[in-house]
Length: 99
Image (cartoon, rainbow, N blue to C red; front, side, top):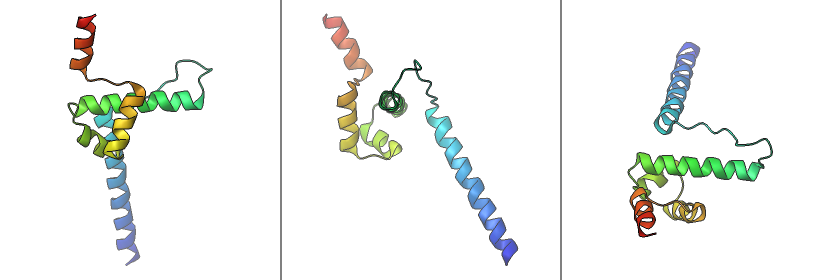
């Protein structure tokens, strides 16, 4: 009985670690602060910005899917997109060509 429990826990632990590594590989982001004087708030904001941008790129700008993958609400994602000034690649190209 105890051997079955141990095997079950080892299997569950391996599956959990595999899921975590899959998520890291899927998004593929590592954040390195730009300077030693960066504040925690700035570092978190920059990391958040990078995660949102990468997830939006990975999902083809499907915001509902991106929100689900980031495990935040759709409205929360829209708020963060506006706050960080993130624009889709096509919209960014249009605004540059109009200048």
